[in-house]
Length: 201
Image (cartoon, rainbow, N blue to C red; front, side, top):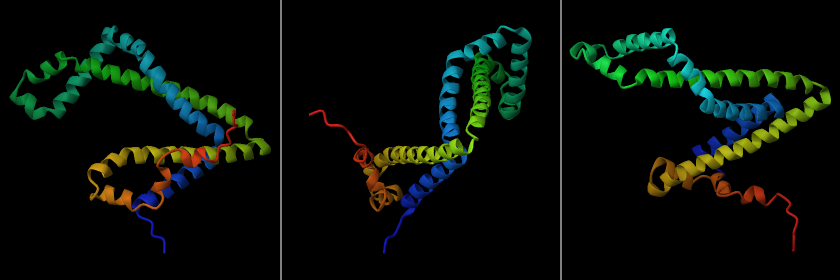
């Protein structure tokens, strides 16, 4: 009788979830979501300085952020600021307001770009509502979800393998050692063996 441990069940859940999610979203939405996420992060990191400079160079906005930061910090560190009146001014002078503005600028740019990608995705998805294309879109989404699931599992194994190596008797170590499915995710040969490669000899 075959027994599946918690890692095997985790693998099955990851694969099923990603395949069903791919089926529901379709290939176009699945790809767009990942590409949109990457593009949003890239643009946010590269161009957040525009929003940051605008806020810090606008006295009203900058003053508003300083005031809000002081209020929030005074609530969080109430007892400490009461005992040490110079505590909050020291934190403010250390540049915490600038850090908060920077983080919020990155988040704003990310959300804005991601929203534009979602709008574009909606327009493209309308094209794939034609019955024939809709079917291909769903099948492509399932395949994409399966591949994504494989990569998540590979990443999971790479993450927990060192823990199992140093702590073989731990919960993770025993789980990895007794897993029936994780042995198939040791390297990419499982997938590569099924990819036809033309011989150049």
